[in-house]
Image 1 (cartoon, rainbow, N blue to C red):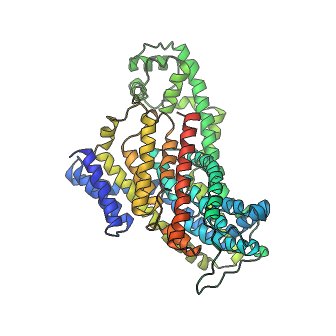
Image 2 (cartoon, rainbow, N blue to C red):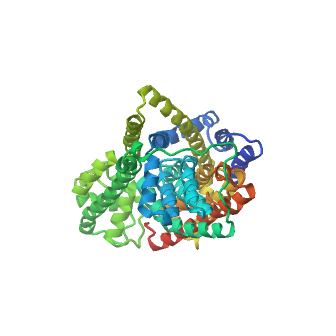
Image 3 (cartoon, one colour):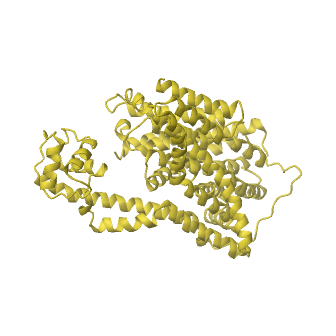
Length: 532
């Protein structure tokens, strides 16, 4: 069966089961994965087994991070740390810039905390601000939505961006840094949009029907600001430090291997990988992972081209494809990278943050360890659902690869294709937006779209830029098309006391603007600094 037909069948199953049959996203994704696997080439006895293997692989790569992020989010709420962060923003920026404070709070808190939780936390503050100012209610409300949604779709460890980074093999620190880099200018455009919405849809705050306003805790009962921020910032700092250390270590490797290449007198017409490998060995460019044949094979995979005459270009190709001898890894930069590789591991970084967050709950709420366990159990149950959906999407993508969709797409998109990168990124944005509109969940849209495009074997050479930009494109697309089938739509409408029509005119328009804006900034950055 044609790989394209199998792809269409898989997409129809996912969307049809979620939309028409109202089936849980996990069941829909696993069903699609099994059907695609049965239709794909391979041994009949292995066609269902490989679905489970792919599912387990995804859980092993990101399951711990998602579970710990859920624990951190719940503990930040319970301890009052999240409330402390918000109040600090308000004090820093003042009442006149309170909308920025709410957006900044949503931006920061949505890194480890799910959007609905952040919105529940911040809405009372927006209502309190309106009571003081008697104006700009929609600015306050939409600012919360904008800040929370931007990082929810662009910055790990929220499940969608985390899964995309895993699917494309993108360094997590790189994904965090670039997500923030795209998110900051998007936030400025978002604030302008919020003020426009407030101008044309000037809605006064309405009371909750049959519900009393919740009272905020006094400052003395909240943890100090630095401790409140620590669970949020610690994983970002550790993971980003590891990314930076690896960049310096890689540069060190290239600089060490370059003189050996020059000494080996590698010529532009040296297209015989075996001869090239032998010259590298003779030049004492150590290769302790295997013999000359292994090195020759790795050089072929590096796709060394005749026009790569410069030693630096060749060294970069070898470094990018991990054709580096263990004997070279002795520099100070590599020693530092070895340390940050442990501390900057996402699993350890989130684990340390979870410990701090749990300590804050016990300290400020004076609860027993039994009560803490119950709270953690509750957060893990919600995180478990996300893990299942995420792993189901990973299994679906893996089965699409088994169907041969990668080779099929590669025949149409090559590095030499005119504007191939633009076509791929625009396609990814539109597919993600379509899936969001069709089934309502940004996370499911990101998981499904990234699974599809990862299965296609998209490379940085085909894009003309780093794969992180494709990841951010998918995240931006997942913001577009939010309407009545999106749980976020109903959370904002209910907690903001808006009618369905008002929510469509505010929330839906705001998210579409965020998605298109982030896509635009992503394209600009991909041209300015492609980071091939």
